[in-house]
Image (cartoon, rainbow, N blue to C red):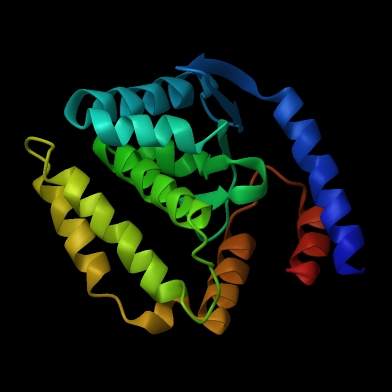
Amino acid sequence: MSRIVRRKIQQLVDFTLLRLSKSTEVDGVWIGVFSDGDQHEVLSRVQGALALIKRHDANRYERVIASFDRIWISYLFGAVGRYLPEQKRCQLDPLFVLSSPIEFIASTIVHEATHARLFNVGIPYSFENRHRVEKVCIRQEMLFARRIPEAEELRKRISEKLLLDPEVWSKETSAERLRNAFVKSDGGLPKGLRRRLYKSV
């Protein structure tokens, strides 16, 4: 299957799942969820994360709102969040949202908003500079976390991420992490379909 065909299929799948998502809106940003879990709880927790950013870091909140047209919670593999510049979309994994403290979700949103800001000023996201871009995003997480009372665990986790070896973001390591996560999690997909998709990863 060619890359162009695969991309067209992905766009069609995205469009369909977006239409099927349970959604709400916060300050002009569409927030939707497509998952097998408690969709109401997922939306509530993301709204709580946005409220936390707004309460403790108003300027950063304005940047978050300006960065995204959509925040979509749907299954990711090997990541808890990502930014899609073509759609101005932040994507979060529903399992992460349901299992994480609100401040961790907020920090991830800040991280992805930093990706958006860097993209908008023309800084490319390539495998050659990926580790540097990620470190910038993680440092912005730390600046945000320092504004949150009683967020010692979050600050500790961010400090650990700052010490990660650049190899963590290499092309080979990233691809292997994606494959492993895809195999371990069905993401609500039938096994047969999952096997076919796995071959194209």
